[in-house]
Image 1 (cartoon, rainbow, N blue to C red):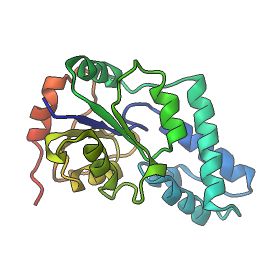
Image 2 (tube, rainbow, N blue to C red):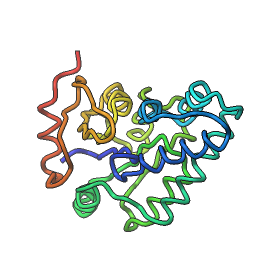
Image 3 (tube, rainbow, N blue to C red):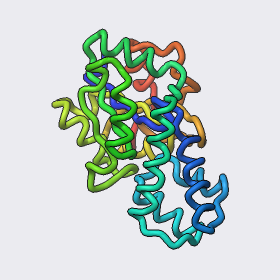
Length: 220
């Protein structure tokens, strides 16, 4: 078993990427800008401040980064409180890990308000640690979020397994030295050293995690 499992949230644990994209279109159009699906796909996995600046640059809307972030977060939290769209197999694997005593950390570029809205619906103790985008200096693809999670758990990054759905997230985890399971969803993930791609978490068990990531191409 891994020493811990470090989970991405949006697109990995919960299928909230459509919520984010809808919020982007709403915010941009309400402020007289133009947004496209191609632009939206550029944002998947990014730190929120980075995404906000891209939205401003691409759409031409006259808002600050803070105003864009607040507008997006507010919409997505409201949607999550109405319905949480869990990704296939994610809750089952998380529950098995909890039952086995393998700690999990949530490592997300969403802010604490959204992470709390998701985590509070899960059984107590599902996540031992939360690392959110408003709590780190450098967001993904920088390794800081994953290094922070491992440090807070008191484990070595190389003894953990990360689960991610975006190239940005996979690069963050592998840069931190965490063997990574890449589960593409909205955007494709290229082959990245230190990661192994699979199509879904359905049927994946705790015992599978180390074997799957152990087959990943080695980091140069």
